Image 1 (cartoon, rainbow, N blue to C red):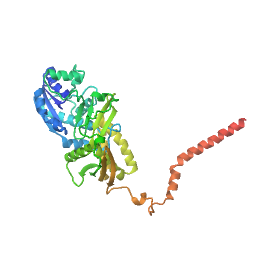
Image 2 (cartoon, rainbow, N blue to C red):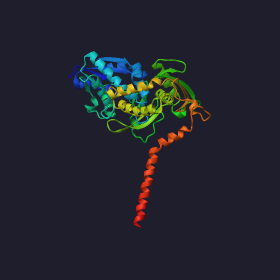
Image 3 (cartoon, helix red, strand yellow):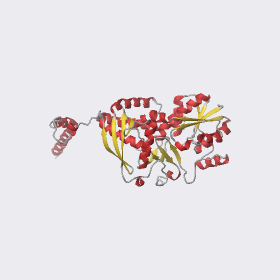
Image 4 (cartoon, rainbow, N blue to C red):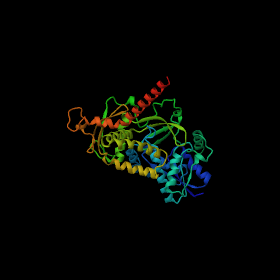
Length: 411
């Protein structure tokens, strides 16, 4: 066994008890690696907590901008949404965390990395497949598949026996994952899909019915499918995301409550808050409708489904995901312009879209008089477009006549 193990540490219940468990069972030094993905206040006590729990060293890697520019924005550009609702907030973060795990392992000369994902979830796949893609020689330790702890209650008891404080209370028994893109909630009373999410669950988003009674408007600017501006400003990606999260959250935007199909074969229920991400996704979709031709737009919808599946399944570093990225980058060159949206009590609606690459020509689309389109041309198009259906109908009619004739002959 390696003398050093680098643990993907979050400060939550699972990773808090993994530090002493690794030391007790493997006799190794445990190095905690924390990825700052925008958790905010959660990170303030994390270094001291990791050291108190038994870590010999703590790395806090600020990957917020890398997360947005290299993972979030490409996924946004692809239009990737898993099963029609989940905007992949946790899924996008896992390959980046794995990348930093590998980097710290190399820096420390460690031969193993560890994570706190359970044996029932998707994250174990995402972490381990990513590590294999980046360094196939690193060993991966997954305590949830090895230890005798079988429930969150067992984990809380293990922590209490070692005087390790954990962020789980009877009032908030949820497993949460927060970053710049979203906040997810699982577990507790949410495990019954018949239970409505409690009113006090949301931390980023105001329930729509409690949002302001007056709508708000926001204008977003995109270049090549990437968000670059907000109103008349060009903020850095972090500032852009933080402002959109605040605005979307205030108006109840981006709450998704869904039962999804996990990669490992079971269904699970998750409640997601993605206020700023939902605003960006809606805006980009409107701009694409204006700037992409019909065939490209429809094919991109197929690509988006596959891209979402790859990200959800932990295949970020796969050749196919990289190839799909190249396709999306190519067709997004004209997805440039600005979009105005109306936000009102959980709803988003377009309030104007402009682009120098717009394929919308008013002179063609108008119901008024125009000199560009000869409506008589449509007749020939319809004849050719409908020719296969006409031929089928002719064949059926002919067959029917023959059958009727044969029937009359028997009489």
